[in-house]
Image (cartoon, rainbow, N blue to C red; front, top):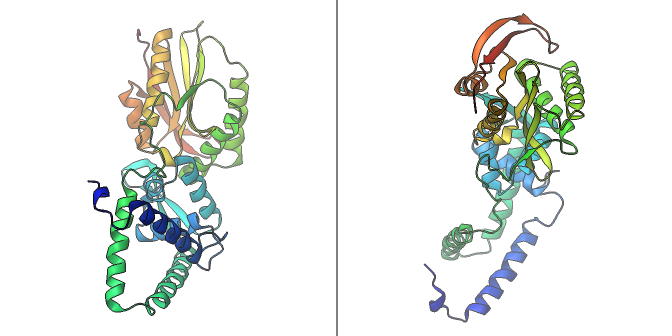
Length: 325
């Protein structure tokens, strides 16, 4: 509902006054400074600390929606806080590919400091207002903030999960480092893999992309602001009719969004068009990925302890028979 016809004084004057007051609030609350609330962090990082503290285990995609950040910026913000020792990630029960965000002990201490700073700031301001004016202010701000949240142009756009506009086919400058980094971070947390594994991914992917374009070989990327946040590749040989599914990874910020399934569907359509039988290597414990593979027609062919990735795990080989497109 639009109450434009009930404005008094004139609507233009009200708009101008609210804009001026909003700018003053931003300045007085400290949002124009490089750090906020007596911390050493930028405003967006401070808000991330507050939201994670209020909702321990929140996933990156939900945090991004609250903060009006896109996926790549949310991922970078979480990585920065983790590097500062303020944030830790933990696997979500029942979904081995999803991660919840939690404050560390240092993060909790910082959150308490931020809360005290903000509470003192508001408390000092309220001493200058009559009690009845305080309640009126709360009600007015609640109405105003709710009105702003409706059709807010500042909200991060939310493209359809796995949308075709986000998926790129073939090599993209920087994608080798992006994909190697995604693998290194995820598998360091999941299985304790280290530099041997990261080097193996980067070296193998670099050699593979130099072959593109080539018959039976293709790479797909989910790209956000020029960065690859998910990938999958098919390394096929038309002479043998056999293909290897490789470098399938999805950034934490995209877990549960359908991007992984969309990439896998692209890859399976490609192998079916070429009549390839397909195999992949993984290891025991990655249940969410296994569900995707089995839904796409893969079955477990063999498993045994091995160290091909630099750490000892129970390696698994899944296969999928050739199909016609």
